[in-house]
Image (cartoon, rainbow, N blue to C red; front, side, top):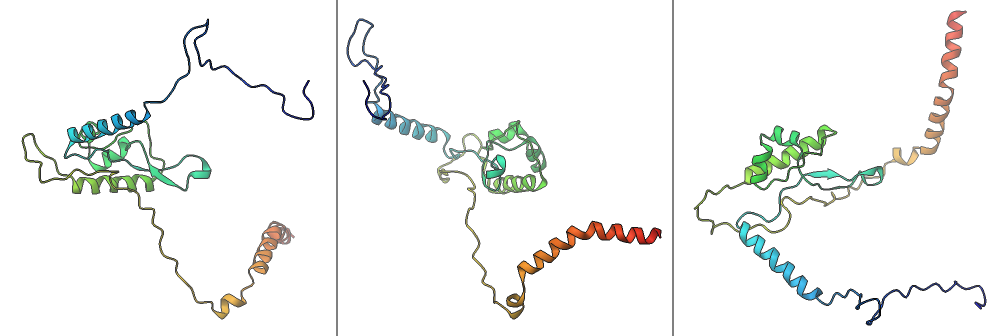
Length: 198
């Protein structure tokens, strides 16, 4: 019998580490983790060599994170909208051939994001070098990492002199008076209208 106020023992001994009447060993092991890591690295290197001198990653847009909690933050999105490509003067099929990611599902909800990503596309077009078949590509180095990464650096703080006007300003009193004014504004308008009628 279980004594004292403890957790009721309910352990799940389901893994069978030996041969049994129900069949062979059924425990999955990850003893090939190191070799898989090497295989992935070699596959990445092979893909990069096949694409050279083109960059491995595609150009992606700057988007705002979903939900109100994270909407102030920006990150790289899946692809540019058809509207952004149209304003930048690029066809979606052609854009995919020159290393630009396209997302036909995404849509622009504001002019600011449209202008930002169009400027991003125009900057990419200005630096783009297109080689024809048979051209010598030895002079060009392959770009590794994300294209046009987001600049998260914050501007330096500006210090302000504390003047006598700032010292004498009563913030709480100003807020209290403003709150009271808005509270009685409707009543005052009603009184004025009543006086006009009389």
